[in-house]
Amino acid sequence: MKKYNQFEFFRFVGAFSVLTFHTAKNTDFYSKIPILFQNGTIWVYFFFVLSGFMLSYSYLNKEINIEHFYLTRFFKFYPLYMFSLLLLFIYSLKYKEKLIYSILMIQSLIFGKATDQNYNYSAWYLSVLAFLILIFPYFLIFLKKYSKYFTIFTVFITMYTYYTYSVFNEYTENTYIYHLINYFPLMHISSFVMGMLLFYKLKDINGKKCYSAFTVLYFLFLILFVQYNDIVPYFSTLISLSFVPLIAFLYLDNGITNKILANKFFVYLGNLSFSVYILHVPIYHIYRKYIHEIDSYYHFSVFFVIVFTFSNITKTFIENKGYKFLYEKYLNKAG
Image (tube, rainbow, N blue to C red):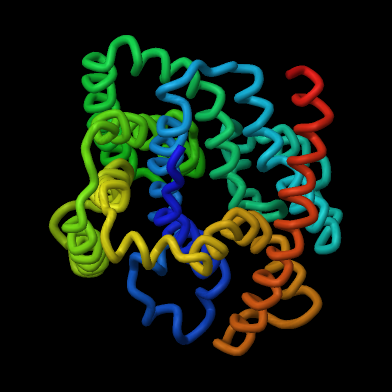
């Protein structure tokens, strides 16, 4: 199966944008960053669309063993996720009774717990993704057997989710409403199935070199649109939709942009994206407690170097080796 490494760079950009969003708000340079890279929430929607797209790419044309699928996905992210929770004990032992929500990855289902400041609040994305992974095999069957109805469903749920967000966005001073429209898993199904449908529609289209130019031009357009748009409310599924052309152009491109983005360095950065995403919050808490507030470019740079270095170590010794150990212990024997 062909590898689409051109997505890796954007995975890293997304992870870095989330890191900046969570840690650099007290610095002078934060306000000068383009909004697309300043607002980490935007990139979480990108991750949901890309997850649906890549899972469909991996499983659309083959039979899926549901138990095997669940375990392989779980083994990929849970060891490092648990390590990130253990790191937080260096920061504080308070509120440990709430830890059970994070261990079970149900914080996005419990109103008010998705971004609990005492734990890894960036992991709400992982909690939602776990829910989406659970339902993916059944959506895949739906897509394979009834693609026409799946398309109708995707259009409907995308419009309905945007409408729901628009209505309740005026009442986000209420914590529960804010949680409902931003973190509750059902509000992100639309982004996920959007990615699934996108791959289904593109799978038989041949790539062309001209998509290199389309990729660059559209990404520049997206930066400017997010920065200067004051006409259309840019939230919820509109964010997801805005990434659809970018993902499509990246997938169809077999020109110079593809070759540049697929080089080893960018792939290396993309491979670190999950580690950067899931570790930056606990390391941020530790840095603030034992070193300094991140209130300058200097401290942000030092902090990022620490996160980047740590991510390299955990990628090798926890993410990769943890997956290999669990796979060999529980799946190789079964196979």
